[in-house]
Image (cartoon, rainbow, N blue to C red; front, side, top):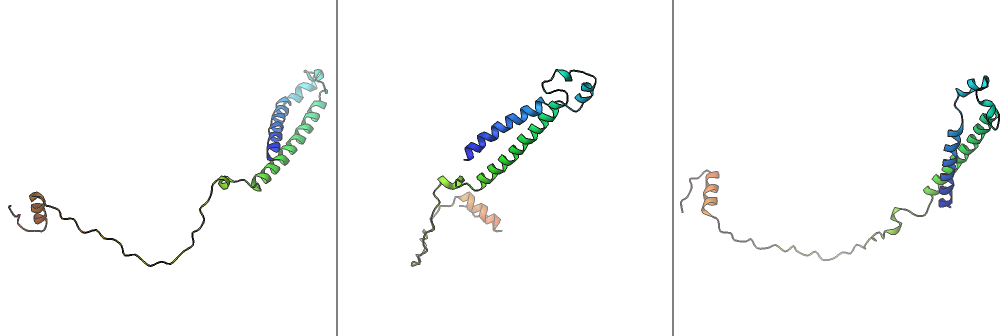
Length: 130
C-alpha cells in the first residue's frame, strides 16, 4: 500500500508542477483586457484561469491528503531499521563463587647505572659510582 501511495504521490507532484507552470501570472490580466492574446486561448480570456486554478486546488488537496496517508503508513508500519538485526537476549544472572584474581609475580629488572644515578639525584642523594 505504501508503494502505491508513493507512486501516486510522484504522479501528483508532476501534475501539480505542470499545472502551476501552465498558469499565467497576475500581470497577464491587464494584457487580456486590451485583446493582447487572450482571445487565442482554448478556454477564453477568463475561463482558462478559473479552470486551471480550480484544478490546481483539487490536485493540491489530493497531494495534501496523500502526504498525510504516507506519513500515517510510515509511522505505523511494521518494518523498522532493527527488523533485520537480531538483538541480544538478556542472560540470566547466576550467582557463582568468586574467583581470586591471578596476580603475576613482579619481574626482576636490571637497572642500568645511568637510571640508578638519575634516580638518586632526584631523591636528593649523591650519585653512586659503579
